[in-house]
Length: 447
Image 1 (cartoon, rainbow, N blue to C red):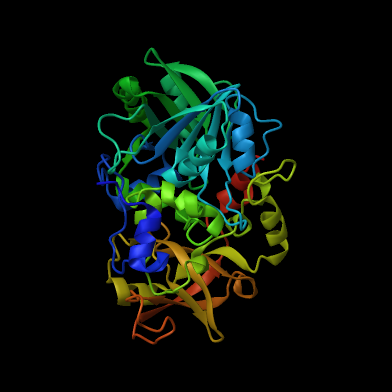
Image 2 (cartoon, rainbow, N blue to C red; image 1 turned 30 degrees about the vertical axis):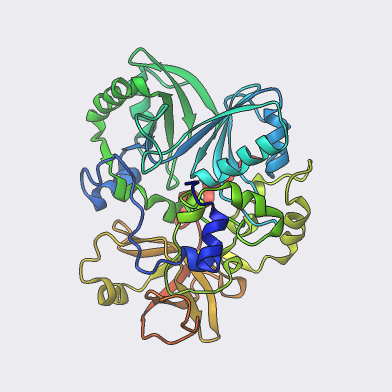
């Protein structure tokens, strides 16, 4: 029996929203990696005041593209600038649909002249692979899926991230001296424990650091070397729970809804995707409910990816994306929850609050936006929600309310008063972390 497609699932459910709406769904967790090592709060604190090791080897999919047409393919399906894309450089990959809204971002690394690796959730990789096959490009691709449900056996590569105040000191200790001066989001080849690694200058939550990438067969030796070097710096390993919270402060929305579900031009694309793909199974939940899936789409402009966008070439969605720049009416912000309300809703010790739910943000005027990524940040002392809000309410200090509850879905008025808890919140900038906002972001987006 053939595997049902995403389009089959939409047709059976009656709509994309009916397919994806799953109230009360548990948040996704990193596969393979221990949930906790030192504990949620200690691990969150480590990348601020100390140094932390995160194992990123298992939760992301990789697709390797190679061939004479690899660059031309990527130019045709994304808004990035490829004119000065150096070998060893990485970029925030920005593919958009025909309507100019984002598919899903990723990290694109140029390994050689005609070889690239695209890393992240699978949706952006599925997008590129579809057009690679459809367009007859002279390019080959191989996908190494993530370990959650999509892969048997070991990953192809390991990824270890060292970040925090003492990250560069630890790295110098591990390698016997500082690595060569490397620009942000550029990489340099190196050797650790006798194994070749690629050292990518990178960090999360606004902190300095490196990401070390290499053949998975070498993962234990490289990890042992990092742990040994980290002993003098009280290195903390970050578990799969705390790791998922660092994007809240650094201002990165990790899993937007791909803008693919209704466009007639993408009917064949939806037919090419399995119902059991990321696009068919990534759930929606929270108090913000709409029958129209397009109400969940996001523009790259709203995500803050403007500096990664270039119109110096033609690409899918180019005209719509260019027109959308003048029409952006939402701004990415961080909501800082009122601590009294946090205690009333989540308890005196909030613990591990983590949700990708779309919760309503309201003012006295009514609906003002929605949350995308909510977590308790223990060193901050309360819950933060990375959100999109109408620009008129985006000024830091503005008071808003978050409606905390699970809308049941179709058959209930989207604006019905369902008696959900209401949490007062204050608008703060995004990124919330001051270093990430004032320094890190100056160099983080590479065109």
